[in-house]
Image (cartoon, rainbow, N blue to C red):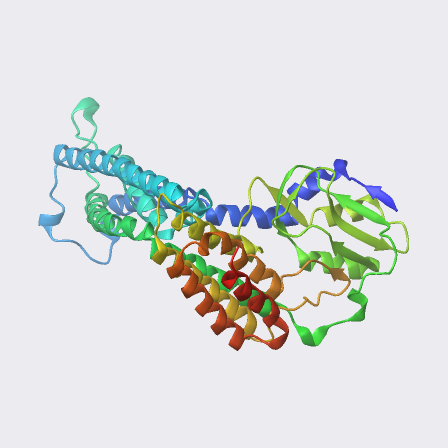
Length: 421
């Protein structure tokens, strides 16, 4: 067996296909991307409105004179007040966001911070206010009072009207934001959001596994791998480009096995891929395989449903801790776990091995998903009689609906919960 560390291809593992997918996922989950885009929209809108003001005579309509009779001093004062007020409100909004994130992190778990960062309501609210501030400043600099140097007075009347409309939009945005922030830290809403994401990922996994297209060529050879590809940096595997792996395997007549599951922590000595090749491949070809996964500093929910399940487990643990003692929150989270497991057992053909030709990998099964939910909560559930009875009831219902092959872990967990320590 030839050990291939491929440190010279480190840029491939963190700089090509999988890294681009990871980058897109990070951008989508970031708090800054949408507000930044709206800032550019504000700048473009200011430029467009400036052109309209300079060519107002060519417009197919004209506004009544009462709408476009603002003087330079009035326009300058109005735009300055808008800019000052908006940036002040933005600071308050940002403070409210930090308080909400801090509260949620302390009460429900630090791994839930990403859910708040991805919240589109917060991103749109911040973006609308910041872009209005930028628009007002940009228009303000174009106002001329015509006093010095014989410069003709110039008041961007149409731009000023748009600034007032944007200010009105900011007022409604602030009202929405004040309503939205308490919703984001509502524990029922948080558990419902995580549960819905978990069910959606389970459905996507089942839909993506075409069981009618299995090929024996995807079975790995019965010998030691010819090449081992390790990670180039330490971190968590966040993304794997399986389609590209399958294309490479078919193109070069290889078999590729993902050894380390997505979400696992790896070091520079951790094998990630095993490659079986009848002929010695080029380093560039192996580098292309190394470019099919990306490592990050933390676990994410992308291609990793068990991470979402563990978030619900963490909420159960915190809810049943002596300092909180909130059994109803714990029962709500257990309900969400039961819903995801029901989907995994009854939707389509259930969780089965994916059918990527010449590529094999650890895959999520019903037993694996179940192991990431109720068994991890057992030590917190058993001391609380109310939650214990509710959990046993959920598991009994689950045992009645899952296929017979998946019933053993559920029945085992019921027995473990009922047994005395």
